Image (cartoon, rainbow over the protein chains, first blue to last red):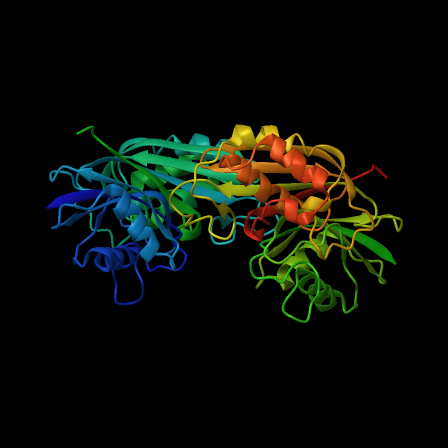
Length: 249
Length: 249
């Protein structure tokens, strides 16, 4: 048996999310069917972060096992890309890893990017790839308020009601807001996140950007430990899983 | 009568090109129908560069006239964007200009960007927005060869057979090739271009990038003044009309 680690890029637009579901096509199903198509084996693919419907990934990490041990990483990458051709999913890299490696449980860091298109005109070329906010936002104020959220906190106020994590306590290592031309980029980095945490923090920071909230309001929302105290959930379109970090084996 | 100048962004993917055609939807038709929808007037829209099917624009410039003289530029921008909502076309800016202004004939400079995605894995997120070339390209060699094309030349070797320009002689002011991460960007700037000129130059430079051609081969192709001496036509997906320049009025 050989374990393969994949780095996966996808456009979340047409999918119900990473996970296999009865309601539509998941990225997981696309990858699993491509594995069967080229190897004849029925492999289960595990990922580092199960992204929601419409959320994109530049660097999702996943792993799967093949019983036959003679398939090179180049063949895995190219054969999967060949069979996934109709779908906006692409294997950037395939590597052979130790059996102890698990895409989800071995991960020590996740990095997300949230892109807000902040201009009067709605996006044409970037449609589906950004959250369009026409009202001018103050990126500096957003960055200042974001620092309230950095560190170890109970993030219940920014957690989806359907979140399955055992504890609402997480350590947010970085939350950086920068203006890049017409866009505002929010970089979020942590060992792990609660369900919808990045999108809920983004929706809250948007309220700071348009002057409705202050950093003190964000602090109060965090302290309330109540989802209804946080801001809106930003749409999935602007969210990207950029990178997953692992300890060197 | 009031003349309006528009800066237009669009994703060329779903269109037959800028121009109205019987074979499908053109960007021109989308804009013209939106003008009629908000003003009741049947205006003709003229653009700076009639992009082909699949070619994108960040900064196409167009103009049109309204008989009624009471419509603000803000209303023009927002009303057009409202009526064009189903389509990936967006008015970035609307301005009132002198009657002497003509989007096409007053233009003194056009700038295009060509994006090549140069990596083994095909693009997922940027699908339709780049030309995917899996073979590693030498961007420096491409840039060197590109300098052969800069200046005043007979560009017959890089001109589409259906090109309607009176003369094949053009002055290319800039042709810059740079590597940006996994992508190679080609910036082309001139007063005007022949039909398919940027895409034909790009296809030729690609042959230099993969070591099939040298700068001397590009020089010989240019001197041949024969389309069959030039390289292939790069696909429309990677081409963007970035900016149109005008003399200050």
